[in-house]
Amino acid sequence: MVAFVVDNSVAMAWTYPKQANEYTEKLLDVGSHGLLHTAFIWPAEFANATVTLVNRGLLIEGDASEVLAMANDFGFIVDKPQSPESLYTVSREFGLSAYDAAYLELAIRLNLPLATRDKGLRQAAEKLNLYFA
Image (tube, rainbow, N blue to C red):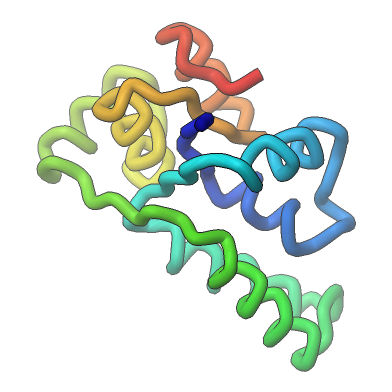
């Protein structure tokens, strides 16, 4: 069984088709048969991205409810960081926000690949051979 860490850029693409691409479609197929981990910050990031889509008129309120319901069905294992210091260290080492570092810190700690569309996160994960390509 495959296991990997999913960040919000991938989760949003799974629920909002206009953000999907070949990479995220592949991840959705593989992830449907695996264990999907995400960082503690993910629920807030996902909700915020959904609010932003509604506020920009790209998603109507009724569809937002469907998007949020789909996210509940992912079955993510939501992991918390070891400590604020661990997030700080990863953030500083790789030049990431602490929010993005939460996903990388989790991938490092679990020794799992990180699925992301974020350029900075991808580059950091590639340096550690943890990018889910």
